[in-house]
Image (cartoon, rainbow, N blue to C red):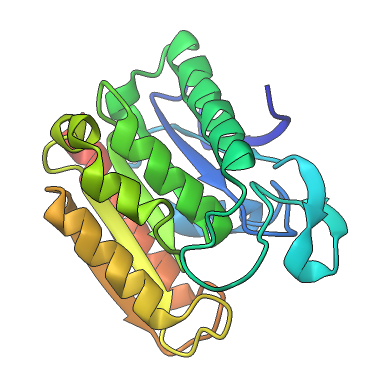
Length: 225
């Protein structure tokens, strides 16, 4: 199982958020935002921030870094390294199963990811049965888009009305804004309830975005009270 950073906001957590970092970062990347995501009366939440495997990344000159999969080029949907994509999906599914084993039901778990981590989170959440409480996909894009359209068994099994929070920087030079919009459209076509947010930022997360995430988390977890 992947190594993780865990932050629990209270004793005996009844909810969990599993949050995948972006390319070259690690599980500590979003740890500091946890206090800003809480609200008065929030239930105890376990935030799980896994560290991706260290692997060479072609577009970064072959340098080894934490990555969910290799990116050979930034053209297309960036899904060249399908073996590592499948591996990272399996590792994320294992993290979900581990939280269930620890007493937090799948319908009380939100899967989140930023950039490359968000791309993996989307793939896992669409295949998760029973359905998760929600999916948070930040500054990201859709992998394996053609497979999603052609895989009838997957389309039929996507959790009905899965709550999805998607956000993107309007000036993102790493993941073009249009890639985020296209991903949101594809998820809506699959029946997901997508809440789309855009911000005047680049490839990052803003405080306005964190406040919006907090409000969305409150809504998702209240539905599973």
